[in-house]
Image (cartoon, rainbow, N blue to C red; front, side, top):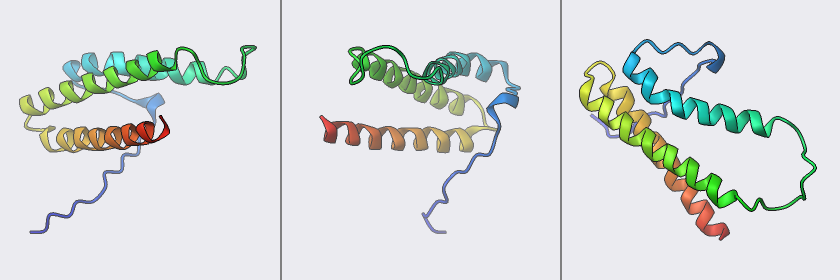
Length: 111
């Protein structure tokens, strides 16, 4: 048995997302709301505000970091409780954790 893993590729349409487990739905709802708000806010087009760095960028980054941490904790908790979803959730949590480490490295390189 090899230790090589294949990348997880998820193909889904967020507009038709249907969550069938009430616990998962309740845990993911705040994250979905935050991401939707971020996407909708960025799609409104250019604003009349001065171009350049946002004065609240650090607040936004902290919010995203906190939401990601909450997702990781809840995902691990659900994985421990659910035998059916355990492998998929552990893989998803590890993928998010890996991406977070890469983003942190990029941010530290830009600072």
